[in-house]
Each structure stands twice: as C-alpha cells, then as structure tokens.
Image (cartoon, rainbow, N blue to C red; front, side, top):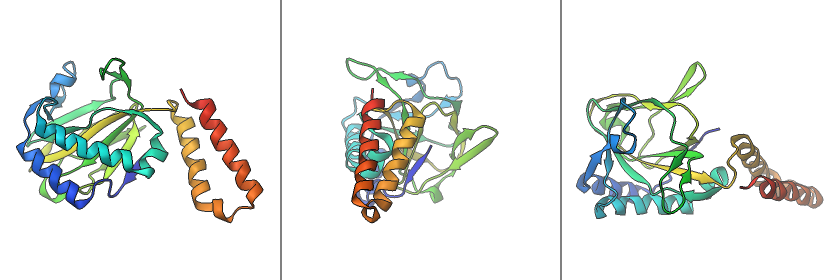
Length: 220
C-alpha cells in the first residue's frame, strides 16, 4: 500500500528547505548503512544546525498532515534527514533496516517516506524505484510532494546522470505494525470520510464502532 501526497510541503517550505540544503553540511551516506556497497549518497549531518532546521520543517509538515496520519497511524517519527545525490550517485536495491537507533528505544521502521525537494526538471535519473514482484514503480515527485511506502519493500534510487537530486527521508513507527491491518484501517477511514455523512446514523455508528475497535485491537 502506497500513498502519494502532492503538497506535503508548501511552496515557501520547499524554497526554505532548498536553501538550507545548499548551506547544510553533509556526511557520507554509507555512515548509516556501511555494509551496503551500493549506497552512494550524502546525508545532512545530524549535528549541523542548518540540516536540523530543514529536518524541523519536514517534521512539522508530517505532523500536521491529516492525510499522512490517517495512512500511517504514526507512533514515532525519526528525525527527517536531507539526502543529496550528485552526478553518479545512487542507492542500489535494498529494504530499510528493521530498527533504527533513535533515542533510548530503537524505532521500528514500518513506513518509509521520501519528500521531494529538487524540481525533477533540474536533474536526470534519480528515480525512486519500488519493486513490486516482477514490476518496478518509478517515482520522481514534484517539489513538496511525498511518497509513503512499507519499509519492508525492496526499493532503490537509480543513478543521477545530470544535476542534483535533493530529497528528505524519514522512517515511521506505526501504531499498527501489520501492513494489511494498516491498509484495512485506512480503507475503512476513507469510506467514512467519503460516505459517512450520507449514511443512516445507525450505520455510521456501526462503522465507527468497527474502526475504533479494530484500531484498539491491532495497535501495538
């Protein structure tokens, strides 16, 4: 199950993050996954105040987005991180780590998120490829858009052949770790949002009853 949001960041926020991205200090991306020989990118230094400001803008956008919250059911969100790909950089096929060293308790990565900052017209290559069996879903989002996908999914970033790809990435621990259960709750929520006001009130109460109790039963 995937979700794409067109304007997670406003135009002003995109402009601010892009400027911060030019000023930020970066470290080698392999630092976060030293055993993956196909990883070749640059990450915003988490100790850099400029990179931290970009992270805070993205985190605020994630926290205010009802669409994202209704899809992910977030419990914890890792600090969003600037991620830059210059010419020749890539990240080969991989699935994200199950747990991330965040704070006193590791964060379980249930949902991964990429927020696009650079205009796709300004760079070539750099598509996010999500592997779906024998098929691959190619995503190259507009500035400010975001894609959410299960962290268990095999995915990659193809080599950048011209320009610079700038995105923000993060990982989310969901209240509902099971992907299918999360999908069912999201679908029921969409039915409620689209049809709830048209329903007989007793039927609406029954739907609310099912959603609330499934959420309660499946939350970890």
